[in-house]
Length: 92
Image (cartoon, rainbow, N blue to C red; front, side):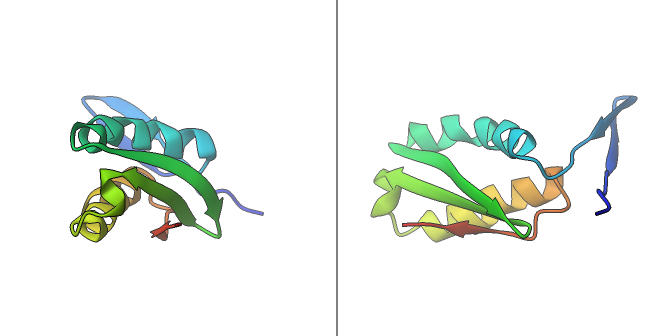
């Protein structure tokens, strides 16, 4: 199996992020304070075939904007940081 490694150059530092649980958690940890500020929480559930499965809970469970948060926030950030992420799926 071939592992793709993507290099990002930021301020002269090369950053390589491959699709691993550790890297996904690093990215999600950046987003957690914003979700918690609105009374919600975010948990990594699983990674399967390039899809990251997460659980949004707390205030996010009944929020009409949770789909927007999932796709335009969480998915967009993960795909930007870890290009091998195919998408993000919410588990209930």
